[in-house]
Image 1 (spheres, rainbow, N blue to C red):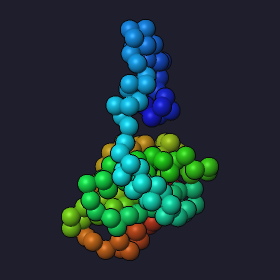
Image 2: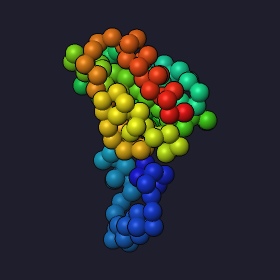
Image 3: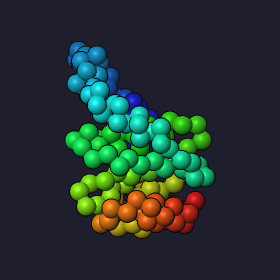
Image 4: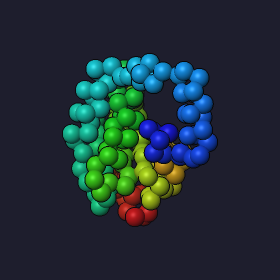
Length: 150
């Protein structure tokens, strides 16, 4: 639920209360879901490259290692914490392709934008994979797709 923010209903709170009443340890759970220093560094490197397009954050990394995929998704989530940003898109290489992770609070339907580029997902979390290594072309297509829906 992304810290009780996204897709959170009364059932989420009931389940959390049940777990706590049955001695679930929040500190242990936090430790279980902690990230490596490498992922954290990569995530914030991506976030530091952000550009704003209307109320949309767009970032990319050209790094490609075992940390990139998870850092890209986490960076897309992190970009939503910027004041005024309602959707975020993060591009990264994956083999011969470029992946895009997209997130929103629901004001902008990122699934529709990713579908326009051949991907899919949900209104608040979506992705796509484009068969090219040309970041400039992918960003141009992404900005055009975003412009259709904002």
